[in-house]
Structure formats: structure tokens, C-alpha cells
Image (cartoon, rainbow, N blue to C red; front, side, top):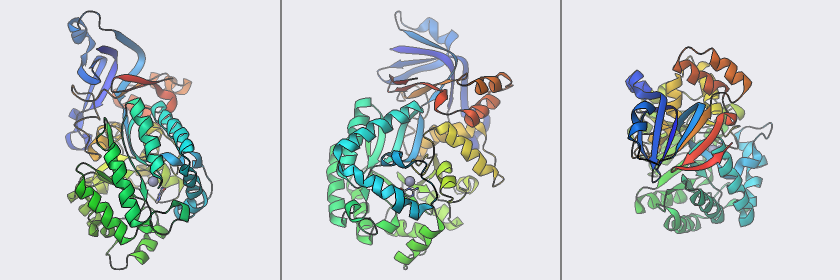
Length: 429
Ligand code: GUN
Ligand code: ZN
């Protein structure tokens, strides 16, 4: 057992649905952790006298403890292509991304990249992510070995691509199915790990491959489906050409049985109302990836429309088209993307998107996303004096909402003092 004393803030529900009651704040709080789970949360004055003798208490000044951040869309093999200049999606894939992913045929390279990637996530306070690997099964093994060593709750899978990809990055419908099956049996449900069936996007899979992806979902309960959807106009036109018999991009996935609980579609920018409705009614989720959508010039994600159709939405960094691992930096860009559309991202909703909302999108909100007793003890200690500017700005703050808002606009990895996964400190600045 271990206790942590600091200001504590977490969400109990979506602020969009329940307003002010959505978040719980303790100005001088205590978080009690036992056996990797939250045991108690409350006011320090109330809980400290009840602590059994000898339980260590770590105290953090000028700090705010929040739940570990949840990243609902990221590519671990793309760390090396962040900040590659001058292309939109399809050229960017050909020019930078496919060559970088081809190097993951080498298991040693995959192990080194997995270690750096996970350290970078933790340095940014992200304790759970839904992660693309490459087409190589060894990239998935490298990722899960390291995630397991760190005790993280992670979701990942092998990319499926049986057409329109370079030879060295292609599988076949049958080999992709067989290799995925072997990986699912090795990793899915082992400790805190989950497997995601990962067709890259409709343009790089044949109808046969999409059918076999759906077959895997039927064969193993609790699997995820992770892919891209309606990110870029040229991509959408290409998918229309490849699947002329389908009514639209989403219908390709729908027709092949890939919508539903634990299906996560990255981007989802250029959709019609009927497609948003279908995402909502099917229990599918979408990943809002603002830094990526701006960097590749893809477009503006319409959060209000997703809300209107009851679609589960998480926040995605989409490294390496995205430009930051930081959930805080991603919320800064999310705010601006919504501003451009006349929408306002409330700071508590922003926190929700990065924590409990992400967990809800991934159907993991019974286990992670806030700090209620029984949840996995995944949390982050944020430093409210991380930079001179942050300290200066927060000194003027009149309210918790103002502090939280300025933190999401000015904060990034520098604001992460320590990260904990299942009660274990996995990063200290
Ligand atoms: N669509 C298909 N593959 C990718 C990828 O790697 N990144 C992004 N942003 N979009 C994609
Ligand atoms: Zn992506």
C-alpha cells in the first residue's frame, strides 16, 4: 500500500452529458493505492488519519494528479518520421512511412523502437494506447514484450495489407489471418494486454482480407478492430474506385462486418450524417487526431456532430503524422480545430477526452480512465510550475477551470513530473 498526497482531479462522467457533476476535485487530496489498484480517493484530512500505520505517503507540492492519459490512435513504428515535410496522406505514406516501416523486419530494430516509443509515451503521461505495429509479426512481439515488462495496459496489432503496398510490407489474406491468429493466441488477454485486428485502411486490403479480419473478430471475444477512415479527399476518392459497389467509405467496413463495440476508426473527418449515425448506433468509436489532421492538411474533425450522433470519441496523437506525443499538446490543437468551426472545447471536456472518454471509446472505462476505487492505479503527476510561463500564467488563475484550461494550452511533456502504471512509478522527470 502507498498513498499520494496532492491536488487530485478526475472525471466521473462526460461533462457534455452531466455538466459540473462530471468531475471530482480534491484541493488537498489523498490517493491510496494497493496491489496496483486504487483503494481510496478523497480529502487528505479525512483519509490520512485512517491510513494503517507505516503506509508511506508521497507528497507533491504545486502538483495535480490526474488519471493516466489514453491515446486512442498512434503508430509505434512511425516515431522516426515525425516532422517529415511537404506531403499529404498518400504521398506521405509512400515517401516516408512505408520505407520506415520496412525496417521493422529486423527484430532488433523493432525492439529498440518499441523501448523508445513506450518511454516517450510515459514521459508524456500516457499509460494506455491503441497502437499500430507494422505488417511484421516480430514488430508486435517487440511491442508487447516491452509493454508487459513495464506493466502497461496496451492494445496493439499487426498491420494487414494485401494490396497497394510495397512488396516487403505486404501479406496475403491467408497469411495475414494466420499470423494474426498466432499473435492473438500469444498476447490477447495476457496480463494487461489486448489485441487489435489492424487492416491499415480500405485501400490496402482486398475484400477477402476484410472478411477474414471480421472472422477473427467473431472467433475471439474482446478483440479490437483498428483502422483509418475518411481522412483525406484523395484517399476517399481512391477507396470509392476500389469498392465501386459500396455506398461510401464507412460502408466498406460495415459491409465486411467490421463495425461495433471495440472498433476504432482514426480521423473520421469527411463523413455524412448517415455515416455518423451508423458509427453511433453500432457502438463504434472514432479517434480525433488534431495535430495529424493539421500537419497533413487533412481537414477539421467535427466533434459536435459526433456528439449529436452519440459516437464514442477518443483523442489520438497519430504519431508520426501527428506532431506530439503529449495529450496536453494534442488538446491545445483540438481546441483550435474546434474554434475554427465555432465550437468550444470546455477544459473539463478536454480532460475527459484525454482520460475517461478515451477509456469509454475503448470499452475500458470499467478498468481505467479515472481514479475511483477498484480502477487500475494508472496516474500522472503534473507539475503546475513546469515552465516559467506556466507558473506565471497559473499564478493569475481565478478558478480550477482556468487552471486546467491554461494547462492544456501551455502544457506538454515538461509538465509531466511522474507517471504510474498499476501503482508502479514508470517515469520520473
Ligand atoms: N492511412 C493509412 N495509413 C495511415 C497512416 O499510417 N497514417 C495516417 N495518418 N493515415 C493513414
Ligand atoms: Zn494513423
